[in-house]
Length: 70
Image 1 (tube, helix red, strand yellow):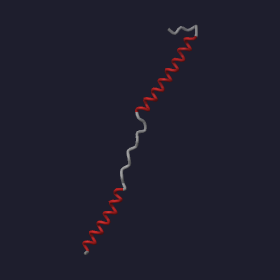
Image 2: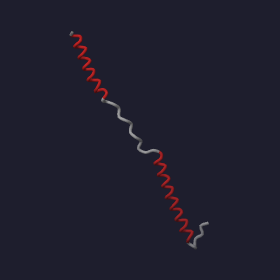
Image 3: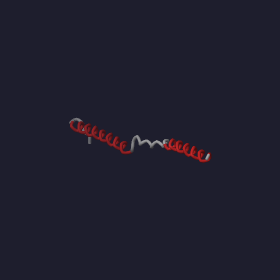
Image 4: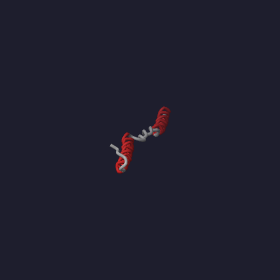
């Protein structure tokens, strides 16, 4: 009779401890802060602004009669 009580006690303790062990799950991995697409898009916008400024400067210089560009 005493051995059944000891086995029941250990089973109860094991059941309580195993629920606490399952509660400590691993945290998910953090998502990447920036991917290659956003960097590529930033470079593309920068190149478009450079092209816009160069186009403006070339047309402005071309419009003046005292300067020959080519």
